Length: 193
Figure 1 (cartoon, rainbow, N blue to C red):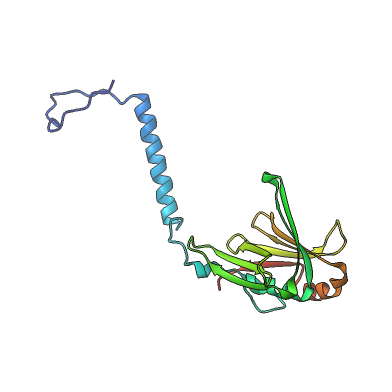
Figure 2 (cartoon, helix red, strand yellow):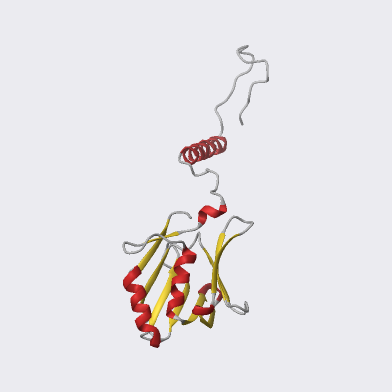
């Protein structure tokens, strides 16, 4: 057991101390490691204040077109027409599919009280709404569905997980190919609004 000197007895030599126990050393080392990690994180800016919500909007980076926001990219899909929107949640064993004519939808970005920016694609009567977190949406791919052979657009997160998939009718392949020629097969969202 460790005997610590009483306050005021330092230097008096009246009390001897024994070396700290192993458990005390482990706790001290854990504290020091935590202190080093927190200090390193703070100096690296890990605890920097969050950007205001309006700065979470992503811009579209493309060699062919000028940068646009995520909502601008989704609005450009309206030229392709009707799509089947698919959202899958494998961990919940759920798949939601709905058909929507994108030429009639509105697309808008909204800053939420929690600081997120949600981009919403909505039908005029609000019977269809797709909300995408602009902060999680890293890129979109434009390609051909292996299952249907028709045009498909996937909005993906940083890890490449699909946040939403839009499968377009085959009769709109020409409009889709025109859009893909303009934007490219992969559209990376970057920057702020």
